[in-house]
Length: 125
Image (tube, rainbow, N blue to C red):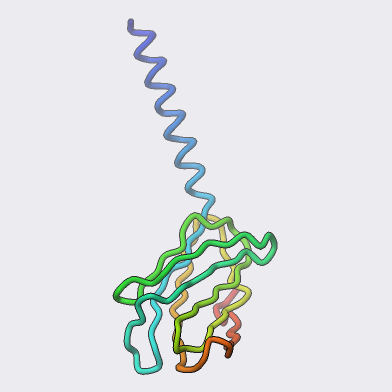
């Protein structure tokens, strides 16, 4: 009976360690989207695309303009934001390290979606 309990405990600890290790490898992009006056923009569609693989993750900003794109594979990403009545914003070459969280606050300008503003990532590499 004692060996059985010990075996179960070892198995549980191994499973927890494996889960923790898997979470450490993923990255996150988060931030807030505002307009030129500083007002929050809810409902903005954001897409983070891995520049090497083309795999993407999509989300929509909350009522306060906040967003979170989690469980991203480390690498270089392109982040785009769109909302009807505003110019599409694209930020390229965002470097994500394993286990890191990158804050990318965005400001959308009034205009049509067919207009795109390209913004390189200006953070130190």
